Length: 288
Ligand code: 13P
Image (cartoon, rainbow, N blue to C red; front, side, top):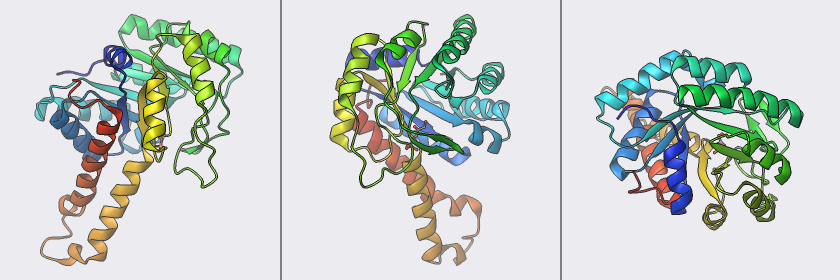
C-alpha cells in the first residue's frame, strides 16, 4: 500500500479508544524493523522523522525514496504515514515538496498569534495536497535534536484556537518530557488533558515523550483522548544496548562478525521487540 496521510488512522483510533504509535526512524534498519513489525501485528503506524534525522539520512527526498521502496519491496499492506517530527516552518514546506504524507509544524516556541498564523498557512497547503498536519501548543519538556523545551502545560483555550484551524492532530504539553524521565517527575497532568479534550472535542491528541511513561498513565491518557503516541528514545536505548552486548561478547570478532549487516542485526531485532511491546500497550494491534 502506498503512503497514506494520518487522518483516517487517527480518527479510527480516537473512536476505538486506542493510539497509533509514531516511531522515529534514524536509518534503513530502524525503518525496516518498524515496518515489518507493523505488518506482522496488522497495526497502522507512523514513521517520524526529526529534522536532525532528516539531515543524517541525506535529506527528505532520500527518505521518501527509501520508505516508498520498502513499502513496495516488503509488501506492506498496513496503513503507513511518513511524518515530519517537530518541523520548522521551512522544514515543513520542504517535506511537503519531497513527498511526505504528514507533517508536524511545531510553532510552540512562537507567541501564540504567530503560531496561529503559520499553522493556518500550512493547514491550507496540507489540505490542498492531501497531507495530515500536527500542530503544537505548550512546549514538551526535555531536549530533542538540540531543541530544549521547558515542559509547560498547554492553555486549553489556545489549544482550541489552534485546533479550530483544521489541523488533523494536536500535540499539547501536559507535563510530558522527551527522553528519559527524571526520578522526581510529577507525572502527566490529567487535569490539563481533560480540559484540553473538553475544549477540542473530536480532535485526536498527541502525546510526545512516549519513552518511560508508566503503562497505566499511557492507558489513562488514551481514555482521555490521546490517539497518537511518539516513541524515540526507548528504541535508541534498546538498539545501543543490544549492539553493545554483541560487541562485549566478542561476537564481532567471530567469523565474519565485522559484517555491518551482522553487527546491526541484534539492535534491529531489539527495535522490533520494543515496537511490538509498545503497539500492544497502545492497543493498535489488529487495527489496520
Ligand atoms: P521520546 O524520545 O521521549 O520517546 O519522545 C519521542 C517524541 O516525542 C518525538 O517527537
